[in-house]
Length: 126
Image (cartoon, rainbow, N blue to C red; front, side, top):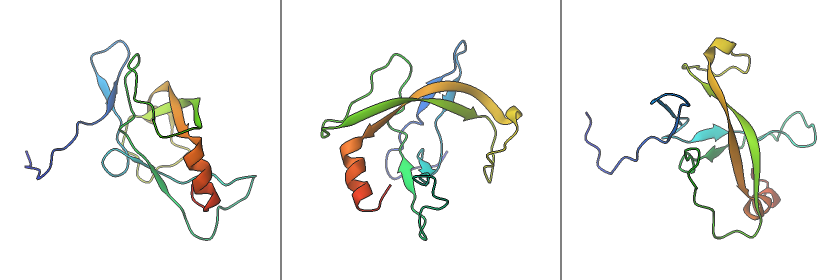
């Protein structure tokens, strides 16, 4: 077991319905997902320079548990999304991955501080 110089947070996870198992929320860089925004208005590319952003894992909460809402926002949006849990390592990820790679499905809420998002968009950021 390695000895870390700073405390390592627990891996965020969610309960697997009907079992005692938990599904870890792991992605790029210590539990965050590396994302690239979709092109707007049907454009084929975003720009010449690739822009990436991280979706942190700290807001992941179990069903029935209230998460902390942001306090410094005036325009808070939410939407429901289909979540696909991939149950095997896939490198590089392919959007045509066979269905036997899927562990399961669930729903999630995507929460957005729209005021900060619009300010970033004005600066050409995701």
